[in-house]
Length: 419
Image 1 (cartoon, rainbow, N blue to C red):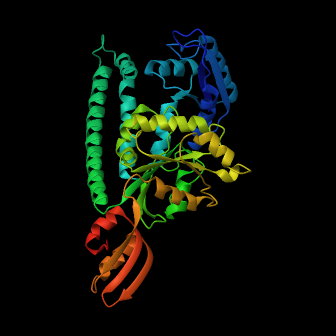
Image 2 (tube, one colour):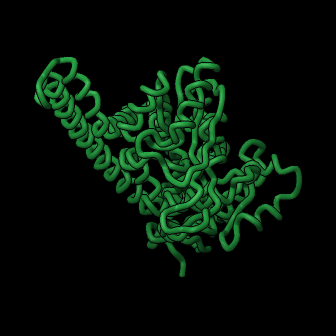
Image 3 (cartoon, rainbow, N blue to C red):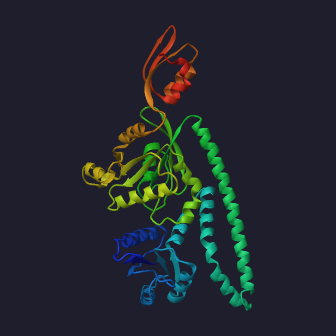
């Protein structure tokens, strides 16, 4: 594979070029390609004042790329930009090899990682929405092959048939996903009635979210260095130091230039983030690009409607820093509340749980005294399960319990409160 990116030297209406990150994006594309199983043979980065409408690149760079493809015997070229259908066809004709763009690569990775029925439907919906506007060129080619006059040849008929089938499939999948959203809403209302608050892990892909999820919940979900290793969401129960029980949701990682079709398709999954009481924004503190990743994730959270949700910045992988993490915390956190942890070694995990306890915006914990008459063992058990028991005494009148209990638990046991 050969990877290609274009860096714009100026934007329309600007006399000087702002700093760009095309090189960093190209390096990220290489990681994506390797995650998909490709072997990167070469990289091309061109600076241009604007994209070429026909091929994205200039004619000279296209010829240079063709020679490079032949010399390296590359089977495909991947562009770090979303290509229009016409651009993709022009490039494939000029380079005489398969041409893909960043969106296609990400869709391919997602398709290979989806395990649940919901995840597979979401990926298929994104793929069909990507394909639909790109059918025109194929139809025109069929028309010429069929010998039809004008635009009403056999190929154009086949094109319209394909379009109808794709639209029908999109409608069917969208209906299925609406059903999933409805089911999630019912499950969410049932969870809220318990009451259990939901926390959501969010962050840039490969920030260590799944490793942290396993560290906190012992869930055993897949965690490795590949991008998008975890695609399907997982929810597990978590007990905080206050004895409050919450639900922790592990979600798909974000990435720069995340295709719009994927954001729309994964709306049902991302609702777990928008409905969360607290978002744990996980960041790879050892990455030189950590500030950019923080800003990008904040942008995506705002895009999906979770920008106003309370957040706790979790600076992960501090074991890779080689020194005290305090300076890194100050540099990355700014005005935000942050906790430094290592999901791999467990360093800081206890402090993270305590920070979550403090940061939860609802169901505050306070100390209370309860008296349970004989025969109320079930209520005593409920207090032991959902609160932190500080002292317990027994006498002829029953059981006297002093506990740090969430407000919701105190409401449920209001009849037993000693004022």
